[in-house]
Length: 486
Image (cartoon, rainbow, N blue to C red; front, side, top):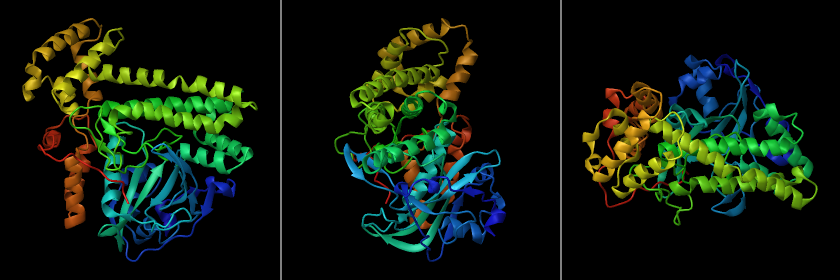
């Protein structure tokens, strides 16, 4: 019985006006098989982790059976995709409901790859095994890195093939999120709904994610400011670990401040702000170095949707919004500088810190040094690992850094501890992720992925077991490319 598993579902989003979603029946699959289940996440959700492999659980994860309390819906949203406004929606996902945890928290339970919906736009609504496993690996790695993210509860295969360029094994990911509210959700209601519906959405968002501001005199302005704060913090965290989202469309920016949609994402090896992995980002719009400015652009689109709630006169509403948006670059930079100081073991602030940070980054770019491993070597003081550390420029910089550390009251031991807690020893190296996916999809061997997930679960541990996973990919004439999961 699904009740024994521990489902405790509510459907607050389904009680909003019908403009916001479409009711959606389940799309059963042929012969589902559980590939991986996240026992620790299940426990935190109030689910019985011992029941995850049961037939009832597998049928829920496959969209064959609805838990008690389910009201399946597909959410409507729009979005600026590569700068162009488009009507979208959950074209291959179903929101089963919102799990209420034993501590009273609320999390969306969504099936991704669960079949056609009214928003599928001619697609089959299904997903392939590789991209679903990729999202599982990367989202759980992001969680372990301490970065706000949607999470992955389970992946099942469907027993059916899907047609892309070739036939691929179908799969469904069960995704867990604080919510699936996006900038694109607000864009949809602002464009296709009424002012009253926009206000309902804003109030719902405040009550769900920002209850502390619900009594503010200008609560909708406060909402904008809080979302700006969370996104400034989130994108700074991406930059600090070299994460490249790959497709920062407004429908892929959450109001909760979580990372969402792991399609063409990847982690940077050699430090270069121009790094792009996505095969569809031909002009580098979403390159690593552009992510902060794109976040600001997306937030401006969010602010535009709220204009009717700021003031009856558009000119004054725009002025209010611009005042809030102008804070984003400063907030982002403050978060980033604080994080970079920590990566270098610096506790306090000095005016010249930004130059010290930029100097090491410029050298890493000039000498094509690995981003993660450079900070790892600095943390461990293993300068023999790269000829970079013998360069005259680096030696000069190193002396300046050591002088900077001596000007703070904290001991060297405390600085080393701060660096270990701020510089991951391992990241989901792209070649390691591909190795795991190839073994799983091509050979049905999930041991490579399971070992990778285990290593990535403690990225700041600096254990001997992690050593092999620190190695950059072998040299190649072909740049690494990622593709949107379909």
